[in-house]
Image (cartoon, rainbow, N blue to C red; front, side, top):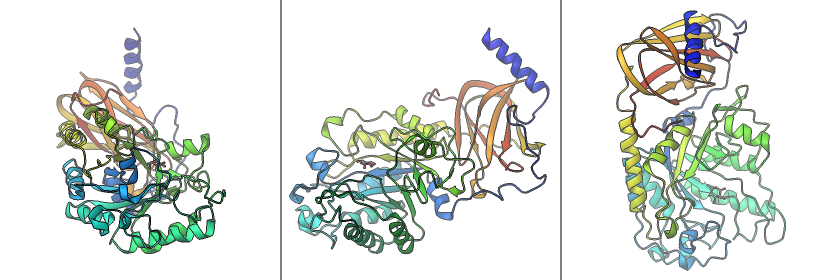
Length: 469
Ligand code: FUL
């Protein structure tokens, strides 16, 4: 009964033809103003970062050997001795699975440095690995380049080993020296990753980070790198570690809500999850999540690796919500990606290739009609009845993100009915539907400010790997 009245409602809505979305009456925006000229836009580096879609996160260090998640900094460097370390294997698996970048924990909270730093003796240089001559950051970036992946580095500000931690200016100088090494010795680094963890030093005082100076330094040394943190400045944390971007998810933010990393509170979390349509700064969200329960490798979690279906679900709730997926796959004590994890990553690739193999709309022209000063409808006549399982929408984000509402309808036997709807689109919006059999599709969008941009519409057939929501 409900279904019937829903269809009737949709039918009468369609009888009037495509029109601006009900609740969002278009304002008196300037007619004919080219779209996307008024809001924030991504930098070339932010565009590259977003279009990569998938990056592999690698948590590796002393915790791998102590079976812990957070080391306390007292670990003996002698425990770091991966017997079969092969960064090229990490990169090969990543590339084969369609990942385009990798981010390594060059230093985690325990302070152990995976490169032979001059700032502390707590590093690979004091370990038996490669006879104390090893440099894992070097092997990592070399492997990335050999496999055509962009390298990124995570350098934890919280350092539970550094004696200077808590003596704020002194530790900040040490941290900057570490970043200087990382950003001058290894060629182009694509992403610099900072978390917001903050503690007290041995002097019992809370460390005060100097974020402006840190960000300036990174910008000076690697102008093309994007910096990640709660507060960007280039890429923001998505606000959780469960692999789910907000819906809606705007790439624009109000920078005053999250000015520095490590803040909590409802406003902060809302801003991280959803961004802000009125935001003045382009700061897209990155969704970091682990393939296992922990960030570091624990043998006891070998049978708790996410399934292929689960990983496809993560793709839909991150990339499919205008975010990027940074999927953590922690190397084992041997220094390799575990076979189970590698198999799941290959499975993810096979599933995504199958789901997106064919665009059912390809070869069928899209007709655009401006149906109001800030509204447009895009209609595709498919020429035959097809079964649709996913609607795949894209805004041309190089000119910003400006769709503030959209509705997708399909035509079946001459009658239009709703397929999906939402707030914004951004880089990519994936809506699982149906499955539904339609012979035409229409997408009606309302714009924040002006004439809507051209929205690209792809349609994909039903597939068992498509998540149900
Ligand atoms: C957090 C850390 O505390 C976790 O150990 C992990 O590295 C995660 C990605 O970031 O801030």
